[in-house]
Amino acid sequence: EAPLADACGGMGTLAAEKLKLDEQETRTMGYGGLSSMLASFITNPFAGALLGLESAQGGTTGVMVYFWTLFPSLLASAVATVVFVGLSGSFMGVLFCFPDYVPVVKDLIMAIPFSLVGGVAGVLFMLMFKWLRKLMQPMKRHVVWRGLIGGLGMGIIGVLLPLTLFSGEEQTGELVQQAAEIGVVMLIMLALAKLFSTSLLLATGWKGGYIFPIMFAGVALGMAGHLLFPDTPVAVTVAATLAGALVASLKAPLFAALFTLSLVQAETAPVVAVAVLISAFLVALLGMREARAQAQAQAESKNIEIS
Image (cartoon, rainbow, N blue to C red; front, side, top):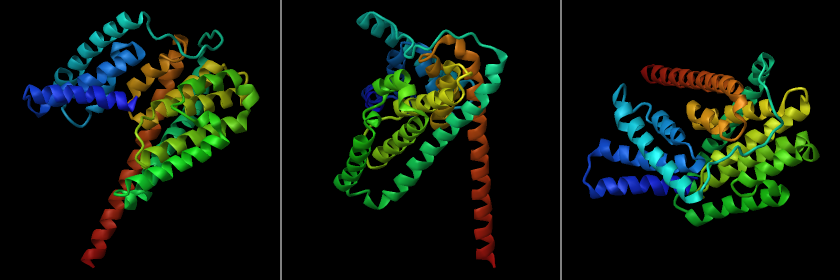
């Protein structure tokens, strides 16, 4: 999805340059291009617009964020969805077919630990990516060697665990169908290996996105959770871990909820809502803790300089 995002967002900024638009208008055109790609990707005009809105946090504030981000993105997404459906002839259906599910209150409680598992997985992915990118910083100018390290690492992991190869969209379907044969331990190993290999490839300069790899890891952990707790419906375990992982990695709760509901049945919406809330709270808590630690470190360094 990353090359498509770059291409579509780039076409928006290119059009803005040709039209000699200002910085704010150029940003709006870029968001419009990105939103239209995501909308056609899952045939839902709200997905791209919501991601654009959440990505604009910290930039334009208040009512203006609607005029410069949400409304243009929503219009672009609506047009893109209609054009895509007209060309392909169909909307995107539910990707994973789980047994029929009727939500009950108990499932909302069970969603909490599973969403925490997904949230921890998402946080772990971002920490691995940050650490590997820092580790590769001295090789920033050595593009070939850096890429070779990433390719070699992915090759080794791919030989040992073939399901971790490629984006993960098709391989995730295999996880769902063969979870019992794969087993709990191997499902967890596949999730961790996918997170590590994706962060390694991105840190070493390979082009790509991490929505589908996160989806793969979230589903793997959700299937493992169902095998451990078979009384909990598989739709609940997968929806909760998947939504939790997406929120923690993308920092976009509304998009994560909408994307998750495009993959699993709509009856899991209450579970997804709880999972999004819990994972967002986890990310916020860890963020405040990190900010507090940084502030304390800065204060201590100032005290040392003064003394």
